[in-house]
Amino acid sequence: MKSVVTSSAQPRFISEPIRPDGETFDTARMAVGGPGLPTRFRWKNETIRIARVLRTWRETGPCDHGSGEAYVRKHWFEVVTDSGQTMTLYFERRARAGRTQSRWWLFTIQ
Image 1 (cartoon, rainbow, N blue to C red):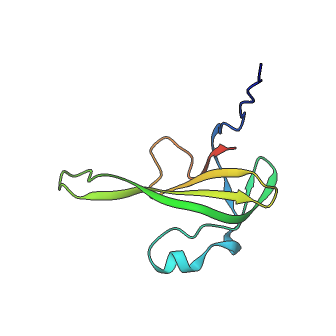
Image 2 (image 1 turned 60 degrees about the vertical axis):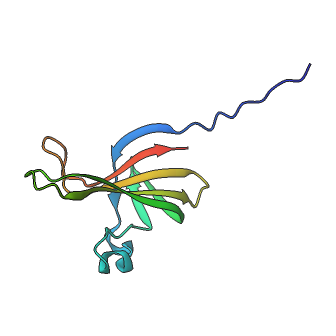
């Protein structure tokens, strides 16, 4: 009988703010109106370095004033760190009421 090996590489939900290193923002993204993904950030007293970006996407939502237009709410980034972890980060275009002032968040770690 064959044994089946299952992968335990399911993403771990985090949903915690991160502190980007402002000196490492991608200014090319900022020049075209997007958030400048930092190449380094702090999370829980640890400095994390982004080695590469796997993919990016945007989340949109309807206008809050009923105009029928769609607005970008979040910019998502799936990245690999220099330690080999895959992380999903997002940038909120507008901080939500009741949340901290942070607009950068660590969503998952795999």
